[in-house]
Length: 284
Length: 268
Image 1 (cartoon, rainbow over the protein chains, first blue to last red):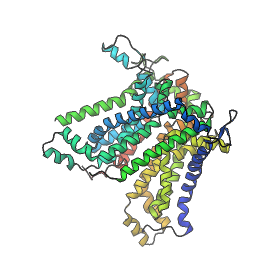
Image 2: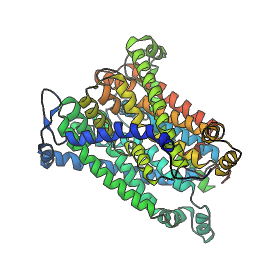
Image 3: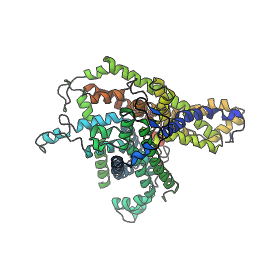
Image 4: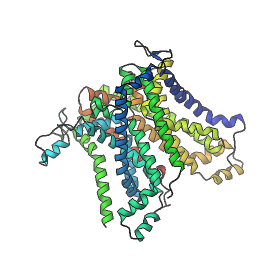
């Protein structure tokens, strides 16, 4: 059975249901959201359909600029930490036995699928005064009395690295698992130490993959909405938190929608950049 | 030798980082008193019983299982015919639907959540439990779409060719050749969507947060109003389910290949 273009109406039948579902429950909601972002807020209900640009004008406030730049800074910090640790780790993983790889992949998937609520709860316990890391430090004699290690910026960052790390490894894994093993062997034969070979051969060969991964993890980290609330103070709230807050607690759906549209455009631009990088294959 | 040692150190540190928080959660979940303390004071499994005994936690558990089962099934029902069509027909325009299926997963989740919230609110269905099922099915359709497409790409077309030369029509080929080959990928797609739906917070919260309390929503609400060890017990339960499901996929399938490595045997 060769692949052939659909000719009869019946040939289109299989795609009818998926297409309908995706159009009605993804494209239409998305368009609704864009529409609502131009509507006027109705404090008693959701919104009134009246065309205004107020929601976008609010972006120009210094408060919004502050939240936006903090979100970007936090996400890029998390992405860089994840890729810097994740890249050598994934490289070593891809060279391990199939069995070792499988066990790690199960563990990484289990952590990746964990609810942000649970990750936030686990780390808030670990950073707490009564049940946390500081108790271990006291037991080891490194600290006088147990203290709470949150809320602060590093608590948020740690939680988000924990959340994004498995994602980073799974993004890097296909490229590294398919990397030609003779590449490093050649470097080793020529007398390079493993670390030198890794830094001078593997890293440059995977340059595009690395940049693409940083961008993907960056977009992933932008989506974190609970960890900044659980582990940080209000000044650590990100754009995602603010969108949720406006939509649910301030019942200002039009403003939330405007911020979401902004976030979409921003993320899409970055994902587009990643795809462009992806089409220019690594030389490896 | 030095390289082996270095690898051991890296693996151990990453393992410690990933497992550490979970160890503490297991620890606090077996505390005897209702206080947050680690190492645990006394040993009690009563908090695990609470998940099933306490009416509130139990109804959350059922709400989550209901949501995860039906949304994962619907996600597979959307992904399977789509991947089949893309594999069977030459239709470049249809790639747009693959893109639409992957988009919700790549964009920050709050965007999909808000889009669905405005949609359900606009058509007046806000808060109905079935809206959450549809929302999660769309949100997680990426996973079965990716696994099933991978399954199709691994089918040897000459096999299908042989069947149709011998007179099998599309329907027979689908039932007797394609289905048996695709089934493992279909099941893993379902399993991925199921586990992620079970854990999902923001989409569920924005669509049905005030009418249906799924387990993640219940944990977060409990977290805000003070600590109970049941939260820790539920978290352990979630980790156990995830490890179990992914171990099963690894046991019956080729997990490294599913996640993008070469097929087994291609390398040692």
